[in-house]
Figure: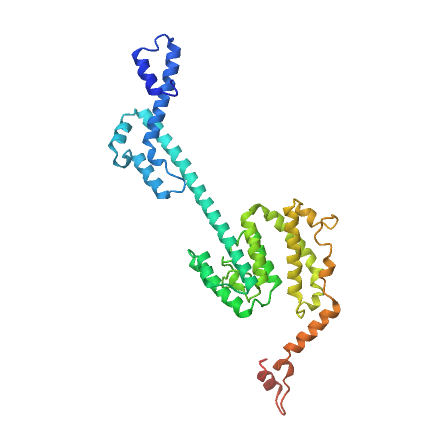
Length: 359
């Protein structure tokens, strides 16, 4: 009774209903009852701190300030109750209120982080689905973009611009394996959380997002890959170490897929070949991870689950490669002054170099 009904117990105690108890038992039960009564008073006095975790944090600040000053928002009944406490009880109350406020503050901060995480995951998933639709249909309606990202005008503008470019180019634009690799490094280190996040790459002075890089080393297939990767990483942030293992594998095996480094600058199919290798290996890797196969096993050439068993199939065909290079040279051939301009009769070497832009 001293625990469950402390007020009733104390009244009964004062009436002598428990005189049969010895002094030690009386003091013990009375201490429990008085402790519970004091706890009840503290709960009433800190009622304004009982806010839901998703409440405006400023409300907590205001409530705590009123309690700390003993004004309780002008509630005279609470002021009277507070003043009825002894100085020792008031000190205990301040400690109680501080502890309760700190706990609620932590809950609010956690709720804010949780809400931010939910929103981040939602935006990442919607971005991926939008890009998948663009890839499938070579564009989407602008109104669909507005419906998905209605509260974020910056994202809407980026996606509308991307949509216009995809429609104009029919989804056909060049890809840079190196540019994509630099972007991927930022994703797996959690520096990029959305395809609309702006960032700079080495040598750049203007920050641009992934989708703003369409036609600048990023094509629609890259956007599908990168947005899927971001979506997966936001849902499963613990996969960072697994992804690091995968891209170490890609870095190691890209050399045979790349072919002769001498031809790197004139090989027209290089980026497509490397990206195709990366996309194929990634699909196998994720499939293996989802089946519970360890990352190191999937990238270990001595294991039967090794994802790169057919890496030789991704290497360039020498005959086809040289044909592509010749075709590219023929296609790009035009009048280049430094290569094709001849000296005019009686033209001095200095005048010649000046005319072709070498001086």
